[in-house]
Image 1 (cartoon, one colour):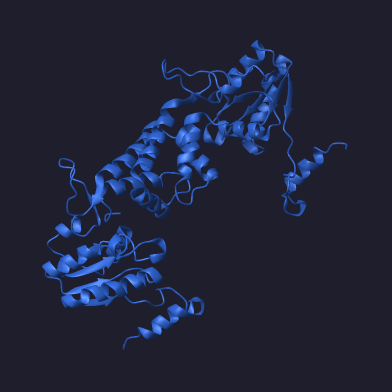
Image 2 (cartoon, rainbow over the protein chains, first blue to last red):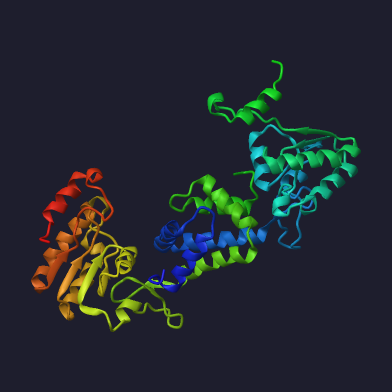
Length: 206
Length: 206
């Protein structure tokens, strides 16, 4: 790295911190930014810092929302503001990206709640580190009839789903879990036994 | 993309313009920047724009150098300034990254000259688009005894090497070309026939 001019070396070092980017890729990206049009490169730098300043969390569902540039306060996201959404259904996900994945399917027309993680005692993440109090509050005060738990089908996600079911039971709301099974376009032969088991367990009459 | 808040969508779009980064990787990087520490992310943005403002070309060899922050003028790079380098040898390369690769080998102690490309008529790049006039000037006015042509061993690089040999011949300088052959750690069996041919052509007594 000592052969690069200092600002270039520093950029390569910063790029290396990104996931999946090693030193060679970082150098390739940095040289691309060095040769590319100056406006394009400054535009990229600008959009990184704008994104960090302007994207915040929705004060209702904790999904992504734009921060009000005047007040600097977190507003409501486009989905929470949308009066056409079915307010009696809330889909609970782990991360904002999961919410976008569900939206992309077009299958769900209700509201969301983002936990920002899953229960994982080994990583020191308990229920108190997640937005679980807030979902209980929304169920108690709102018109919610069904909570669809769409946490990931792994150990942490399943534990979180069970915990949610336990704490939400007293409110009397209906709690459902998304189906685990063979992915579309998948192949039984190459699917792991646990998934095949879940697919049988979750079978439905046709 | 319509499901992302606008500043996030814009960042993903900008990241997609980088080489080897598709929409999925761009989204992954953007979410990483969203979750990461704010200072780290703003530091990355800052180092991108600083790099573009502070890295310029050396006015002698056209390699990378830091721009003088006071005058804004291109200075001389660390290698051209270094009095311990052998001023009678100049290694000609296509790109600044090639210069760094040669430096890394530790094999060369002379000066450099970066052409910023190679002759490629199909892409409309002729000798006038490259820093060829400048290398002729350096040979005519300097103490140069040997020009080592280290352009890439492909059609454009070879054409550039031949052109350089032709235009530099009248100055009486010695012109050499780096060896083409089997890379260290390589395997004859899997080496293309042209490279094997070059390795035989370039054989030396041991």
